[in-house]
Image 1 (cartoon, rainbow, N blue to C red):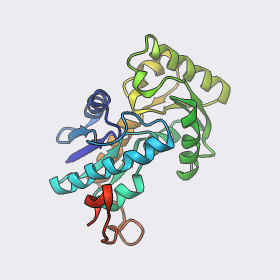
Image 2: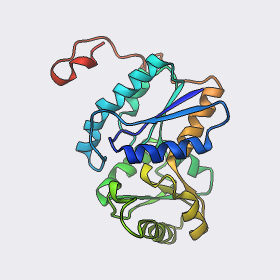
Image 3: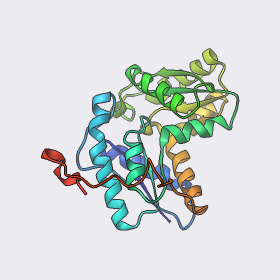
Length: 242
């Protein structure tokens, strides 16, 4: 089985981190490879960033289809381009926000999300609504550390840990969802510090894709998620026609 993890931003450091985390939970015989697109924003922290990350993401999905990939993970908590990726891919495509929220739903009556910048909180609420998790999502909180600073700011792990502890207390939550792929290696130390389950979306998504592929399941292609109808694209998007 081959799982391709696409980090939709262009940060190679984050992609390497995501790959290590993804490989740590892959079963024997499952090959996991993480990539960044050749084009796009270096981090995704706005609607503008998210929109401009999608062409690069779709390029990587299309390349995976040519090379025999069995399933994909979209490693950004906004789950950008998820529907479009599902149209292109034969196998399952799972976003880390959806995977993390669904995993957290198994662990208690409610979860809270701790993300990076406050401006991204609205997207997390929207996704909770879309995925049918609005009733279980008790709150969305920001640590106000930019994505690319998570591994650079001294004491960033302590800041996020404190934010998680405060969020659990304020929301009465049974679990925490980490709202950024750049926090993927922090779930275990934060859980040990605050005493509640902490869910990382990268590992949750990899295990979800792995399970779906093992069961022989893939996105339904009967209607909405069928391959897009062929048409011509122009300008910078001319290569996206098919």
